[in-house]
Amino acid sequence: MDWLQALLLGILQGIAEFLPISSDGHLELGKAILNVEGADNLLFTIVVHGATVLATLIIFWREIMRLLNGTFKFRMNEETEYVLKLIVSMIPVGIVGFLMKDWVESFFNGDIAFVGAMLLLTAAFLYAGHFLGQRKQVGKPITYLTAFIMGIAQAIAVMPGLSRSGTTIATGMMLGVDKKKLAEFSFLMVIVPILGANALELKDMLSPDQAGAVVSAGVGTLELIIGFIAAFFTGLFACSWMIKLVKRGKLIWFAVYCTVIGGVAIAWGMWKA
Image (tube, rainbow, N blue to C red; front, side):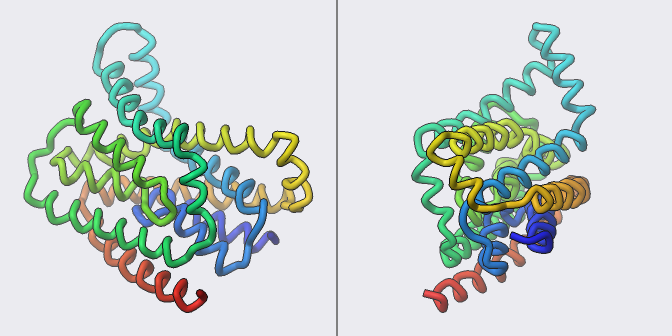
């Protein structure tokens, strides 16, 4: 991987992580187009995902501090209840991560046609969220049940090409949840699972069996820094923009985009096969 590939993939990750178009899917497509293979994939993916998590923490730092301050008062209040709902939302993806990790990772194999199919599924979620959400202008609060259902959507979205933010936000819209609360909850509920997944991947990479392969892959420090910076700053922009779009309910165009890109990816994958 050279510095230009790192820059382009970092920008791609920063944008796609927060927009409902699947960062994992676009990274798979980007790596296929740029011919990035091997252990570079895993190490670079961990670094750029860490960058977008940091962007999320910065965007929501006031809200995070408010939640922590309220929770550490050790009594049931609004902040404690919100944190408990976040924890409930993480249960499904935690189960998938611990029990089905190897199975999920088997899908990250450069199968462009599969990524395209998952992008079409992302589009289906967004279409459903848009049209069904139009009928439910109730603005319901997030309950433990809706948090768990959104968590199931997040667990399904571990596949490359299936957007985490797209599936969780669209699911919330279908349930009639207040749009002003959706984006914030969706982004906050993914922080711990991403950090946990990255920690597990780093643990595996630092094991004696894998460490030599990572070193021999030759991914450079400069490329990792460039990818991290690119993902971080584009992530800051994309996260702020996405919050505004969700409040306005303007997700239908991303459904159209995923439909087009998904169709192209399937055709490309079948042609390559």
